[in-house]
Length: 503
View 1: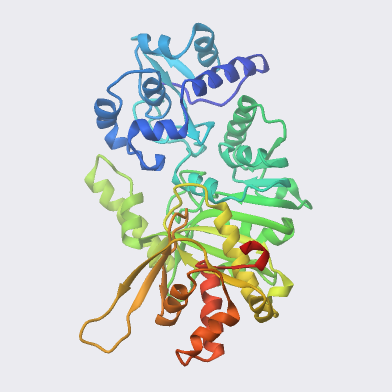
View 2: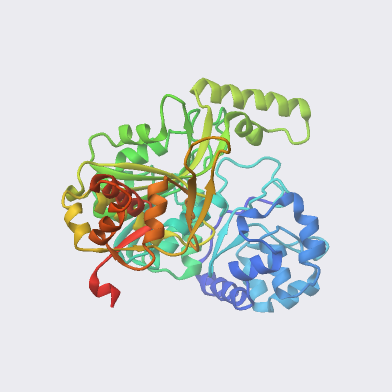
């Protein structure tokens, strides 16, 4: 059995390992090139059951990039000829000496950990498929560091990347979000309760050369008591589990043991004007929606909340997906029973994958609000679109919004796809589904006939008063038009521009 990799590196080896990773990046090992080679639209779509297909089809041409993908992403073993072509002797020695790679008794090179491409950043963490033959663990250890999976990539693609003074990454794991924040923050604090996760983060910080990341071992906000941050990110343990077998995954029987404490602590650690962004899963009860629970956790804190519902799983399917016993049918059915029983005890009818965004409320926009939208998981950066949703919601809530509207012009936000629907044989008017095309968060909106008509009228920048004049021909009162325009702006389908912007 191969000993579990401990993410320890001597100071003398930091530069050597940094050079080896840089050489790998220079060879084309990055997210875009990996997706092209594996013919995937999203790297989260990798399936371990498809490994033979990847190797026989997409990776049949054994060049340098193929070897890197097989070794560091697909957990494969590459022969000496490929290893020598992938790394020079100096890089080989550094990778073996630091324990990242080892050579088996047949001379094949294998990796004890994976190196995940995230954009042009490379992140070391434990293997995604830790039960494959290597690193040889019969059971996945409790302190396994979470791989860079789908939820990590969703948070990466949704986090705002504007310049900030300070950032805090909770449940940091491999440190991926701390290192991403380091690129646009003066100071970053990465916190994890797991010693091994903290070592993994330090390992990645050393290899990356980032000088503005501090690693703190502790329970959530405890190491930063009394401090406030402009950006807070978190990808906490969230699985409502009848077990407690994986530290990075299990959030207690309700799944809320960690995430509730994070949300409760936000008002004490987020600066005015700051933003907190969390990727997680939450169980939902028919009589207790997610939005109500988040508001209760915040207490009296005047914060606005945006909920992006990315995926929904029935309780039954969730139990089946997490059940143990891949090779023993009886064990598997017993495990399904345990998982389903726990979800039933919690009252969950479904589990929802969500991205949560919190900001302090703007007093000019009235009382705190909660907005929930259904959106597919982002395949590319969508942080700017999240900010636009916040701004649109706030401007329509301002007390003087009517005056703002009268001195502005209306413009469609971009190309909009419309799909009309009508129930044949009835007198019902046609409704339409609208979607702003070319966006990273293509939220589908239902429009009533008036909203659809207004969108069609705004062919070119149109003053609100001009729109009212046109609407007068349809015998519509001003209040009805105002409400429809407000909804179109909130949904991001219409934007306000000034006369100066038109020139």
